[in-house]
Length: 286
Image (cartoon, rainbow, N blue to C red):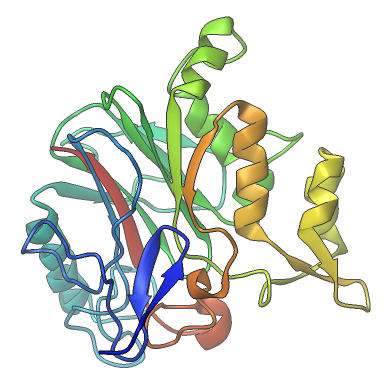
């Protein structure tokens, strides 16, 4: 077996793709990502890769998105594989790259428009689909509530410095109050794979969307030339979470092993492939 490579808060085996930390649940595909974070025992989380499903190229194989042109019967089969593996009900949203957050229950319909979701109900999985955008999974230290956010650059930037992460964190407490600040300190977050800072080319408008509201964001844009920049999406998310008072942040540190573009056998990437599938990051109470 080839030697293991540390990659943030999960590990890959060089050669055949795998996570070296064994899954505690035998139903989980060993090539999916399990967060290495100190979440309470009743909180469960994972991020799928492109491996383990029924779809054929260019959606091979575990495509979970119905909106990308794949055979709907294959997507349904893939979603059933995920639901059976986690023994919970994943709720798939329609994600318009905004800041809307929905509270999930077993009755929430698939396709509900939102880019964030939160629940305190057991057996309902907050689920975010991605293929370059950043999935963010959150829980409080008590393990009484879980949430997920779809953090593409538009939703992350939001308007006036209020984006999807601000909206999701507000669901853990009353915004603008001392209680909210206390609650933020009791939240932990895990950042999943996304397009990396060596691959995320953006224009001036993206940089201004962040820097105009927080000058500290300047450090997360490296000049490419010609009014183009390399942006660190995971770094921007960490900056926003810390500004909110969230101190326990795990997962994607901007390293190459987390980059969806850089690993075609492991991750779907819309920017790399243009046509392809979607992965899912899920968090639920068991």
